[in-house]
Length: 428
Image: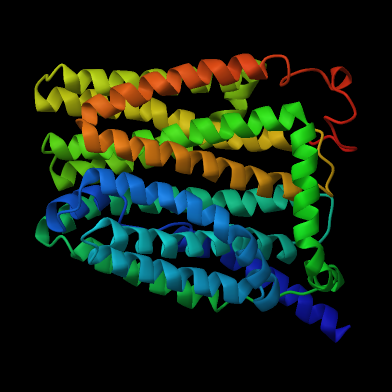
């Protein structure tokens, strides 16, 4: 009885702390708004090297996912969360002194360690902290959603501050980022490790993880629906990330001030937050055409972003158009990731859903790596505006091709799928 009371207290403590923790720990703060500007103007790094290193991040995520999962099972969620924030601090510190592509790749490897741990340990920590009730899913969504909303709001505020602190001293935003990650480290130590019988059983079955993952890939290869969705996810995610990198280099090339960088990042953060919440309404309006509209819309945004700079209008006009187009692209990006995960979960039984998401992460990051490396080679041989335009054209063609492939395989009624395509439980 006393043990049960202690467990209840631990659960309540974790649930109450989680949203506050994620406000500071979901991602790095102060860095992204001026990352490209800092690396190119302060450290003298080539834009193509930055794009290449980010694509290596995707490869590192593929390689590290299984080892990270094994480590998490061995040391627990609380310690894993602490270590992930520690690596976040190391990532920013390495970034501060990176002057070539090798340094950047080392930094991105460190970042990959961070999120290979963070993306599994933190949601799992919340999941096991919520009692097993019929409303567990709603409770999880409410707590996790609050944490994400808090992060976007905090990130928007700090993004504006980033531009102004950068103008004072380029290293100041980096130092502030390390301080925030250190604060997240301290908060993570306040969590309680919760281990029930089910968790213990999962650790006992750790040796079967590789076998289960192999079996899930076998299922995916047989499922045309899942295969289509994962290829779509990889292509759209890869080009959306590439577009973000290209946009940063374009803004740097046309002489955008650091303060403007911060404001733009804040705007994009707010747009992403709103789009994430509105994806349900978007799906209700466009139904099975949702992914098609997102892919075509985003690829056209990428093409137009290149065209506007190629036409060489006044700098202020280029910035305004790039921001407006970027808002559409960020909305597409935010909704795409939520909707793809939703569709992947349709028809999936609870026994295989986690394996489907793990396989999707591996496939998505592998495709992103291929697109990123190709984009880096392209950027090294032409201007950022030309690279954006050419990349957009390729994105548009690839989108049309995958959408044609998906048409007879995705968005069908349950009775139209074969038994190989669906599991035993429908996720609505």
